[in-house]
Image (cartoon, rainbow, N blue to C red):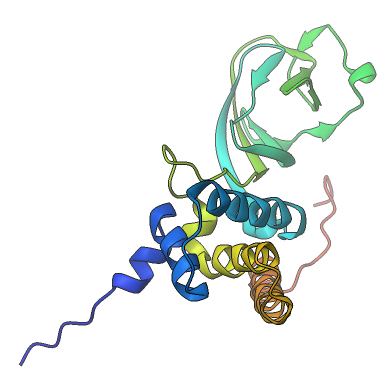
Length: 210
């Protein structure tokens, strides 16, 4: 006998339309679509402020062939940058005023006006790797999902319910959903710390010492 287990609930939570439907269903109330969008946006803004760095880290390849390079569209902050050419080494963060204009192999970077600036100016093309903290891309009708909704839909759900309960002035539900939302965020932070500290114990390294 074949048993079919429905995944409707999990799939529904991981789309914008499903998230909106779930909010209305949980509160047993029909909300205007613009109001639902506001609840979700306010939850996003709070998550943007409190979510841990490790949960946001992603990598992107870099071709360093000029003094500047364009940052990814979801860029929030640099974690580190490495350059490869007969070996791999990290670039140091530098103040924009300290960047030099002569050419050579880059050893420093700065973020200026939404771009990466390198110093010295690369004399040839180098391969690099950018590890960065990504922003939360807002959910819209044209972008109905993102990495938070895919990995942690309950964070969106409870965060939006806090805003919806406040909208209808239901204080008891505000407290309950706030507690649930903060529990999920706390679990995400714990998961982030386990990820960052997984593997062997960290040992100090001394560069240039054999």
